Length: 170
Image 1 (tube, rainbow, N blue to C red):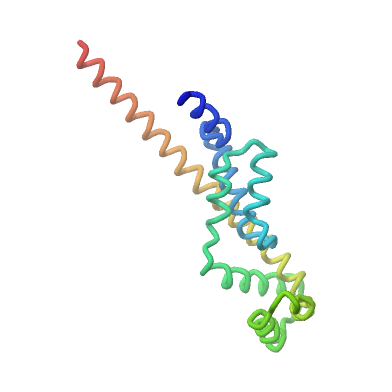
Image 2: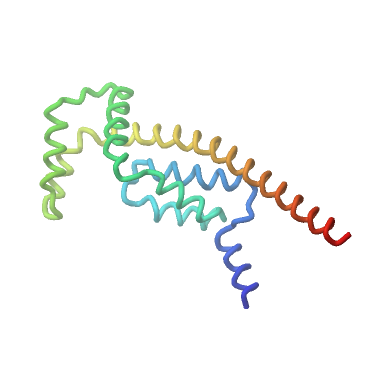
């Protein structure tokens, strides 16, 4: 029974993927975590992980690498960068109106919030998409280095353990 559960968990989580696929799964999660799809990160991550047969844990870890206290600064900087790339002038009054709309928003006021944020929508989308691509590329490179180093360390440890066992048996 325990072996069956282990096989099922390995199949579900894809824990024996290559380092490249595991790093890609993490990078996909980072991309989604910082993408413009705010609020849909985890759902999209799990959906894509299942559809592509990727390591679900790696994807979710990537998705949740966007810590709550980072998000306001990240999305503000991404929106400003997007506005500069698109040649859109963001008036300080528009930012104040958007912040005020967020502070007082309720489900009944979604139209007011949408109206306040409309001038920033393309800047937000472009900036956060470019930011998420750059972060995903960096996440892939860094996680691949860590995964490869960890697996080499594991293999070395396994060889040393089996060598000790052989020496003990002799």
